[in-house]
Image (tube, rainbow over all chains, first blue to last red):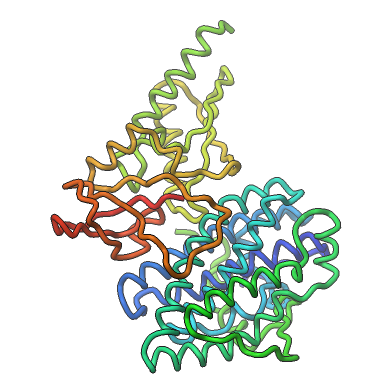
Length: 257
Length: 170
């Protein structure tokens, strides 16, 4: 079995992993819908978005690997880290749930990523800025598509609304983590690598309120609950998704097809 | 090296790229798709600078390989491909010839890209005007925001009843 790789303690690497792992893990979750979506058009949509996200993850993880003295490639970073070294917010690792849960999470994450990519176009790291320029176009399309579905389901039937409300009550708890700052954010802000997490809170809330308003839904009240995936402390769901993702590369190192 | 000869090699390489089809939309060449940024003649080798279309487009690696093979086969190699991400590719870079060939192939070409900084519209959005590539009718509707490849959406013509693909403008 292939052993885990070790990462240096570097705030730039950690900032990049928070972004790259968000794309990687949400891409994996969306891929789970392949063959299971309620209609063929959404089966295609979810897997297309998964593909865009995996492509974005590849770009960011390649850049992250360049920050390591061992010069890891994107596959080593994607498949050979221990759970604590994945730095995605907990929001994206939650099991895919029903279709309402999936489209609402997509709307929340796509809105967040869109705002983040917008800012990262001005990153002091030219490669990150270039990745952002492309990813922004994709995130806008994802946001539009997911928002359309949130409106359709929220302002839909009694059943679709009930499911949307349930999804919102659960997902909203995990949104607070997206906007929590720490030393990684301070370093990124100081070097011009990218914005601190808290800078995106207000614009994100404004866009989410617009989407939820149109869906006749209301954002839940704030709570004191804070998830901690960005610091590597994940929910109980993370180990399962990683074991599925990593099995092949752990058992057959370097396996390709 | 003679300057005229150099220019000729680069020009010949551009002509070769005009005949390398996009693997997923073979009706148009990689040059017509607007992903070839530069052709650099290094004398003993040829460097082709490409810009990827979508972050996760699985055709990217096939394109790299077919570009190298075509340049090598034309005797202009050894060729190598380098990727340039910025500025990001936009469908505005698809050539007029490329647009005509897409239409002839049954794919509605992309319209001009929207202002990327505008916030998304949740309600009261005007439907995009996409003309049917078969009968030209503007009486069309979108069936699916995503399609068989990352770059396309699925539409249908209400006039002639035929489904068709639309190259999304990004």
